[in-house]
Amino acid sequence: AQKITQTQPGMFVQEKEAVTLDCTYDTSDQSYGLFWYKQPSSGEMIFLIYQGSYDEQNATEGRYSLNFQKARKSANLVISASQLGDSAMYFCAMREGEAAGNKLTFGGGTRVLVKP
Amino acid sequence: NAGVMQNPRHLVRRRGQEARLRCSPMKGHSHVYWYRQLPEEGLKFMVYLQKENIIDESGMPKERFSAEFPKEGPSILRIQQVVRGDSAAYFCASSPGGVLHEQFFGPGTRLTVL
Image (cartoon, each protein chain N blue to C red):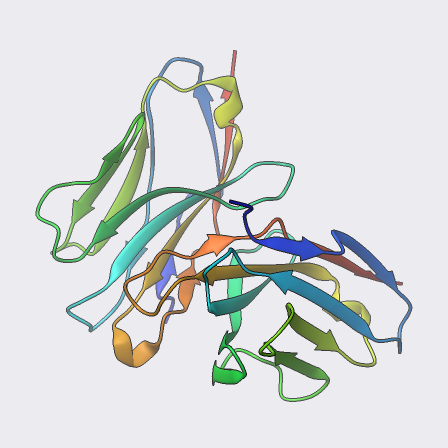
């Protein structure tokens, strides 16, 4: 079974509008972390936002917020006021408990294209 | 403080040759992770190393691939007798500690096997 699922292979969004990128995960651990990374066409991986499984509040970082619904095992990324520079691939990732080591498991990604 | 450095950024090899990818972690980081990204896919974990030790190599192919992180110098991912299917982007990440620490990614090495 997939541990991280991103069901949207690609999305168009109008500049200045908000966009939500879906991410569902599968783990039996109580302690885990969820990450979102941006990968522009230049290829580097840019860390955006982190949510710990015990965090009660949804994480926010500037225009990025994470809609964490623990019971549904979802960790959707919301980008507000989209900009042309937001066009990129976006990856959701999970780090499970200590027994699983510190490795990150990534989803397949969602390609976002912001239209002017 | 320089970030994670990887070199070369681009590497072209012919089938059967060896590929050596280098990763210098951020200053003060003693934990290194290697990931592989095939075209149009997400990153997949390969190996997790601390200085002079392999902690988790559950994602490494059983043959032709090896990794090290010596006491001095960068971490090396070595691929022997490369095949076309090895063409991918290889990312290195480092962290200062174990489970609770964020991983910082390098820019990646893009390997092309002709």
